[in-house]
Length: 252
Image (cartoon, rainbow, N blue to C red; front, top):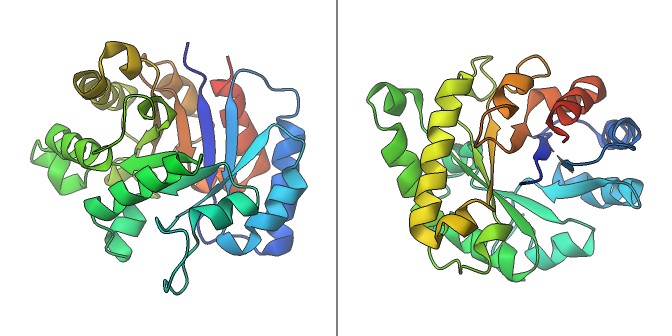
C-alpha cells in the first residue's frame, strides 16, 4: 500500500506571520492523523521559520524550487544543502509555472531531480499538458516525454524516492479539474511507463499525485482512483480548514 502524500504549495502567498499561523494551524489540525504524509511549501524567505514552527510535528516542509548546484554564482537561488540546513525534506521541481515563466527546460528539471536525490531531498516532480495539447490528443505523449526526461539517469534504487505530481496545466488555478476518470487514465499511463523504465515492482512503489484545482469537495473522488496517491494542492492549501479536510480524505 502506497502512503498518500498531500502537499500544499503556497506559491507567492502569505507574509511571515501569515505563514507561521497557517503552518501551526495545519499542524494542529492533522496532529492525530495517520496514514498520510503531509507537506507544506512556503515561500523561500520563510522556510526556516516554518520548519522551526513545525519541528516535532507530523508536517514536513518543502521548498517550491531548488537549484541543482551546492554553491556558486547563481544569484537569487537556493541550493539543496541550504534547503536541508533550514529543515526542508522535500523540493517541488518542474512546476509548470517555473517552466513557463522562468523558462526551465527538461534538462534543468532532470538536473534538479538528480541533485535532490543525491542530497536526500524528496523531489516532487511536476508534469502536465496544456489545454491545446489535451485537445490535440497529445496528453499521453507529453507526460511520457516529461517523465522520461526528468528521470533520465535516476537509478532503480532512487526511483521509489521520487514523488510525481500530474498537474494538467489547464486545471491549475482555473477552477477546472480533470474528472476522476480523466486523471486516472493519465495516472495509469504514468504507472505503465514507470513499469517500462524500472519494472512493475518499483512502479507500484512510486507515488503519483494529482494537482489542479484540488479542493475539499472533489478530493474524495480523486483519491478513490486506483493510481492516484494524493494531491499537490494550490489555493486550497492556504486555508487550514480546506487543507486539513483534503488531508483527512487522503488518510488511510
